[in-house]
Image (cartoon, rainbow, N blue to C red; front, side, top):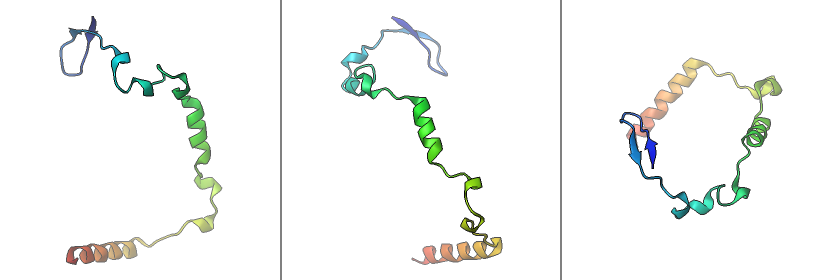
Length: 83
């Protein structure tokens, strides 16, 4: 037995669920340690793949006049309504 707390509800006693009996238990790292996610390594990998603004050249950025963008957006919306 354990005390189960669910937000918005009063705590209550509940029978513990045997996780090993679940059909998807084989996908957990508890079953197979090779499925363990190293969070620090994952974040290092994803942070190194992003290009920061400082690394980009000035020519990589396009400056668009807001009024032109606004008028083109309105035109596209009208075209989509008529389709």
